[in-house]
Length: 98
Image (tube, rainbow, N blue to C red; front, side, top):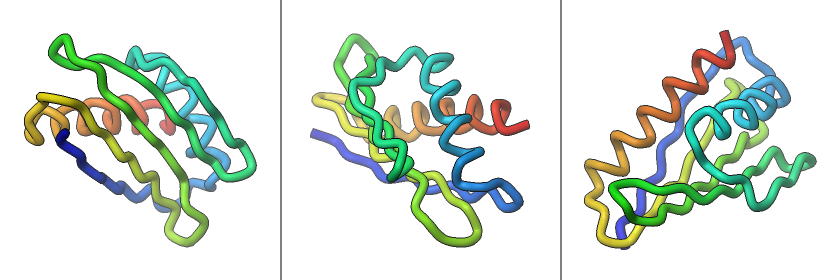
């Protein structure tokens, strides 16, 4: 199983702004939320990539500057494909944050 952790920073945005944008971006990316923890700014999702299941964990850790961390994993999916999918998601998230 390939696993990848990607962190992107969003200076000038609050943790809550990032969390709300994650909820919108997840839907636009085609992922299905199966668990949310609003108090921890955590979203757990399932998705599909190259006809294989992927698991996505998104969190906004407390701290400054505000960051969003994505843990993405999938069976039989090369790390470069997971990386490209993370880039695609963060592109959607950036648009949601304006």
